[in-house]
Length: 342
Image (cartoon, rainbow, N blue to C red; front, side, top):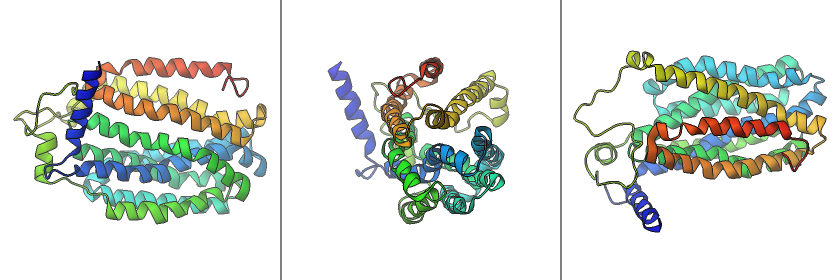
């Protein structure tokens, strides 16, 4: 077993290097994904949930009216998603990242002026406008640079949400308690201005060179691998892939769509309502809720890296049991009555 993990570790070390012997630039792009996801995507999601109890009291709204901002945000994201992929291909990843950062930053500032139900709902539009394009852009960026280690690279990129969840919830709770629910996000807009924009400008690189493409996607350096089975592009002489119409005719595609819909339905139905339930109904403090959120993300961080590796090892069929695990763990929420059970 130890020899196997040693071989795996050496394989990862070899894949870090690019054709020039230095670190493969794709890993720099993976690193650049972190501040983009943390400050554009994760900050909005986590702070909204922590703001719900204060908004419910300050604006005298029902709980359904408060959490409806997420429906507005998700609805906007669903509409924008139809054209997001086309715009990424046409304008490039960096342009989309700039656009998402700008929209989110302005959306954060808008929260300072929210004083009623309709303004509260309206604030969800710019957040939804940028969320799906951001995720598509970051995943496209990683997919352009990786094939043999696509699972590991995507797992590392996805762990950005877990890192932000480990570090920031307690800080966000402090911002809300100290500066008010409508000033926390405007303050976080400074991170987009002074961190995200410089990272996108100086670090993100849209397309690899021909040498880098040959190393990661071609037959060069295709030494026997201990466990890599998850590549999306096999090393064949045929450069053509399945057409979009063929994908639509594949029943597996539609099964995955239905499964993802129900997973999102249950997951968001739970997560968007749990904070006001804990604070308003069970009398949890906001700091206690934020601490449990951080703990959950600590566990999520290792799992995302693990399942990235798991994809490389067993491909899609090997991780199908993840759906069963999701259903099982969400069912545990029925027993929440206090801090220990949470």
